Image (tube, rainbow, N blue to C red):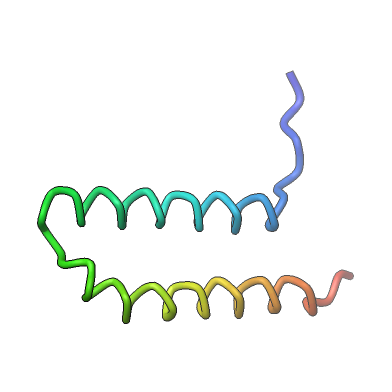
Length: 61
């Protein structure tokens, strides 16, 4: 069985999905208040966006 090449876009989408699931789990378990995630969520989305831009503009040799 051959291993497929790494796809960074799928990785970013999967990372976003996992982060949303974790956020829902910690709010449901009363570990973190939903109000606290209103600050953390945009920071995470911005970091994922910067990662996506870095992958877009990377040099391929």
